[in-house]
Image (cartoon, rainbow, N blue to C red; front, side, top):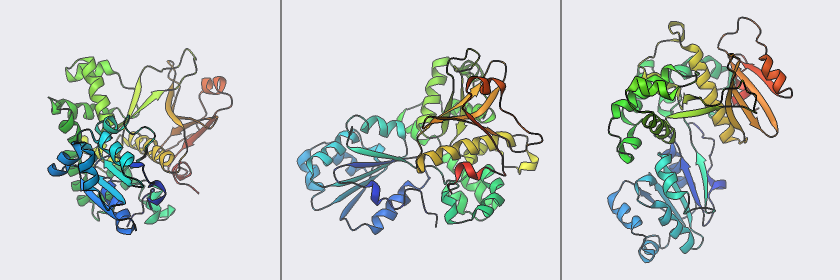
Length: 377
């Protein structure tokens, strides 16, 4: 049993407020919700958003009917809430019209759910984002030494709950491929009616090979034989569907700094490898540096979300090729992190980094010291 970062949910559930739980498909949102419901003393009603009668009733926004539907309950929970049209207005009616009601809504598609509930629920909601299993959550199964021993496994297969719990290598591959094939683009295709799903998959392949590198939108457009705006639209959809994560360039007006391009990382290493159909062991690969960087960037995002520490994340690069993989700005501090799977010689901070940001930190993160950055003491 893996204890998730938000368990127990009790501190996040408040009367007349909506707790919104976002996250990619298959990361455990429904399990998290059901675990809470199995232990709560509140009288609850659980609904599923893709149930047609539920959709019709909730989207009617009939105050009398909705109050009748929830009469006698202290908690209303709806899983897959993105499927209910105008769900935000319905949730607003519930928390405004029913005294002391508690509400939990889960959704796998941030663009659909955020678009529906953002404005109507201003001041009436709390949002949590659930990721694939973090290294800190895995401490409920393994100690720090055991996590280091399993590091190669996480770099290759990722940390979706079913994958982590799978016993054999073949089983892990089968599960990751099934998630990638059946769920990765499901929300985009369902809600956005993208005409050419093949182009989306081809775009993901291009991004998979460019992890850790600056991405040119024009080059992507040329490679895919689509226009520049289509590429931007697809990238935006993939971000909002929790498939990829965008990192922008950091600058405080040093003319040599690159800011117009971006880097893209996958929310899970296993899905990245499934996209390119590559599950070979690390000693048989030439992309270990990319896997390591993707793993560390996303694990740091999980750490900042779960504990939480508030920071903005960037990469840093100059036109004369000085660069730092991850820059973190928060709490009045500026920290630079360089991710190296193997370090053959000492690495010093880029000279323009030291010159321009004299008070900034700089660390090289390797398999020897990585836990300091992503697992709390």
